[in-house]
Every structure is written in C-alpha cells, then in structure tokens.
Image (tube, rainbow, N blue to C red; front, side):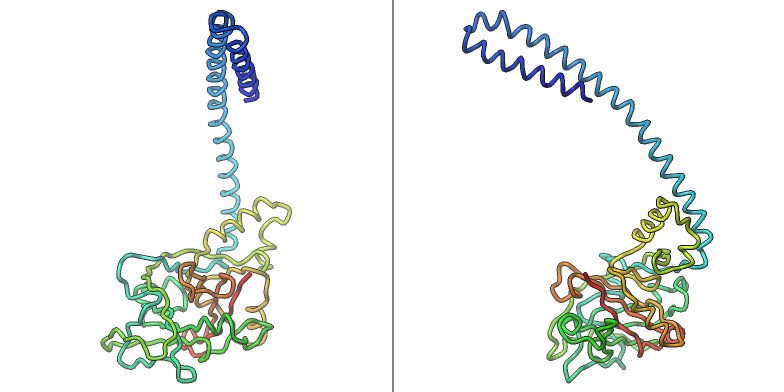
Length: 325
C-alpha cells in the first residue's frame, strides 16, 4: 500500500499549488492552468488507489486461510498431547450468572432449612456469601466426589480476609469459624427465607447462578507430568496449552484445578504436611461492583477440602486461601 502514500502526497502538492494559483494568478488563469489538470490527476489517482485496495483484498483472504491452516494444525497437534493427559483432566462447574431465580446464588439473604443456625464469631454473624443446591449444579455427578444433592452455604467475612492478621502469613490461610464458615445440609425439611440478622455488618450483592461444565488441566509450571508430555522445545504448543487453560478459567468455579495469580506453594504445603490430599472446592473472584465482595487487590479466594471429607460431605475442615497481586 506504499503506492497509496505516494498518490496522497502528489495530490496534496497539487492542492497546495492550486491555492497558490488562486492567490497569485487569479481565478481565470487558475481554472485554465491548475484546476482542470488537478481534477484529472485526482481521478487517475483514485482509480489507481482502488486498484491497490482491490489487490490487498485479494491478498488478505489468502493470508487468513494460511493463518487458519496454521491454527488448525496447532490445535490438532495440541489435541494429540491432551489425549495423553486425559487422565489428569478434571471436570469443573462454572457458576454463571442467570436471570432465572434459581436456588443457587450469591449474596442477599440465604434460604435455609429449619435446623439452620447462622454462624457467629464473638456474637456477630459472619456475612453470607453463597448457597448451592447440588441437585441443580451436580445432579449427574459430573464433578467426581462432589455431592449430587444437598445444600451448601458459604459465609465469609471480607473484612477479616482483607484487613485482619492471617492465621499463618507463610501460607495465606485463614481461621475457620472466625473468617469463614461452610455449612452443608441434606434434608427434606421445608426451606424458609431468613431475615437480616442483627449486627450483620453488610450484605453481599445478590445474583443467581446456573451451571456450565468445563474441563480443566494442571498448571504447566506445577505439573511434572505435563512438562514431560509436552515438547519442551515447542513453545507454540506450550503456549497453546497455557491459552487453553486460561480459556477454562472463570470467576466462580466449583472443583477442577486452581489458577494461580502468582507463584505460591500453598496447596503443595498442605498436601505435603497431611496424609489426605486437599482438592479445590471453590474458586471465587472479586466482584467489581460491590466494595465488600473484594479480596485483597481484586484477588481470588480458594477453598480447599480433603478428598475424604468431600466424599463424606464433611465441610468442617475446609481451608481458605487468598491470592492477590
């Protein structure tokens, strides 16, 4: 398209000469000597410019086909490696905002069974964050070892997460029953809408969620098996793998692999110190339009649970980690 730049420059020169002609030579001489040739030249240059654009349009589809071909080849090659890593993949549920009034939701006031007791710390209620109906979210058992029925309630004090001393600054974990509490009920009792509790500092923004199943894979830097499977000298494939992981990361997720904001050994330290392996229970990002629904500097909170506890629907020993920039 360099020819177009040349044509434009020439046209600007003739326009300038035309202006000089008007001032210096008079209108009649201007029409005879400059205006008519300028119009003819402009017409010629416009014709040439259209030809150049036409050539460019003929080139672009070919370039696009080449790019798509390369992209498809990379995807096919990546799928070959993913087949070898299938045993490492984990299904996860993305909790997607919906306009439908589902039971599963964030914020507002919880809908609870008659045996429910609001979790307290120092005679103050811990703010309610999330409720999940597993029969809505995991009825077919897509997320392995997670309940297929029953109700889960999550309470989190974001003030404690953001401003109070952590239980252990080395691994960024927080005190259960103080900063957060998780309750599980598998009951047929009638549910009721609970009223706002006295001394409750704040209520998180309310929105309803539904499910979207996604497949997750381990972080390349965390998994020796992934590193040994993918070709180390093929940066294109490694980048494609990392891009695939990024596309399967969402703000609110149940199960699957964790996604690190920055490098840390939190989960590794848990699993090395305890015989039971911990797995990701929940991932919850900050919400931009709720000042209370924020973890650190717009970071993430992750909840981890022992595999054996998860199988037994025991949520008393869940661990909370915050990741932030």
